[in-house]
Image (cartoon, helix red, strand yellow):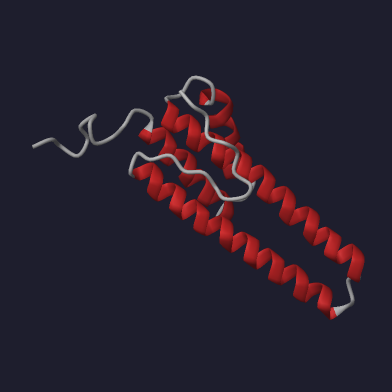
Length: 134
């Protein structure tokens, strides 16, 4: 019987893939910005040389963090610019949009982390870049 850490159970790059997904979730839930900087460093350092599984997860988490953050900030600012700070429906729209998008990213991050732990690739729906091939 193989041990849980045997190479057959954990494809090459699993640890780095798990780290990328964990940093993605930490960026969303605990340390925004700081965790993104760590994720960007990992992607810059290992993105071109990592095993395929790790590369896929690094690419997904980096770009979805970048696009997700840009969308949340830009569209929230757009709602405020269109409605003004004093209109209550502006805040309803901003909070509702932020909550829905943020929640969707967290759920996607959880699925991504589970996929990384299982040694499988993961592509975020809609805003996730295509998976790199070997």
